[in-house]
Length: 320
Picture 1 (tube, rainbow, N blue to C red):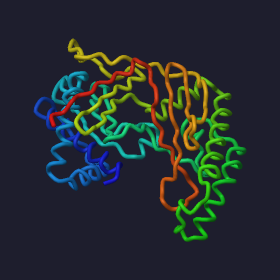
Picture 2 (picture 1 turned 135 degrees about the vertical axis):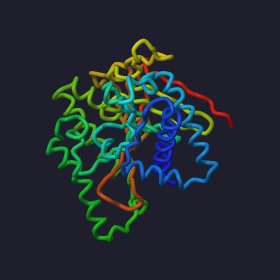
Picture 3 (picture 1 turned 90 degrees about the horizontal axis):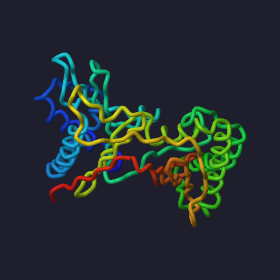
């Protein structure tokens, strides 16, 4: 199974554990949609032993979330329904990285979980001469100069794809890193710097909000024998009390950045840029070809290298 498929199976396990633990305590409704059907399909492709491991990992995570989010199990009456939903991938393209959400409309409250299976990448964004990353990520359009510059790289790749009927592979190209990756990264760096100068505070803040998540969420990372839970409490909406019932642990609000300090190539790397921001944020952008066949687009693996010390993280060990 691919990383995407195992991730979706883990989403389903988390939804199931929320339902299992809460439906005898409060009124729970599961939203039936295509995203749920897809996640269930991938979960059901595993053998019973693997399914059990996924559910056990999800169970540990959900128990902990119930301790720090009292509103999961406390309602204000029978009409206060806890709605559980798996979000579509389209939401992620809009900057909402949450996979599973729990919503109480009557309380005007919700929390979300980003479910990860054995990886910590925060985003897999594409670059191409059709994608305006400035508009999409930051709310400020890329310049024509940027598109002209990357067109010098992507247009020949499009010609290779067309002339070979989409059969030519990347490994047939010479000096791929020097001829393709480095020029694209240089153009991306130059354009990000240009956009930054137009509105520094907005761009620094929006970069992290788009890549890390535009809405507050818990990241639940499934390891082999452990599960890690991180609280991205960027806007202060997580960890709320219910009336006089307080969460068992405090997840402090995290300060977003308002300055980009530097954008540089990683030392001895031709594929990775490091973006350092104030308030102790740092991101890595590693570019690669997403497909084995040549196409006029590339993909970023974006990782969070540093976050403020106020980022709440807890690791739970699982029985082996």
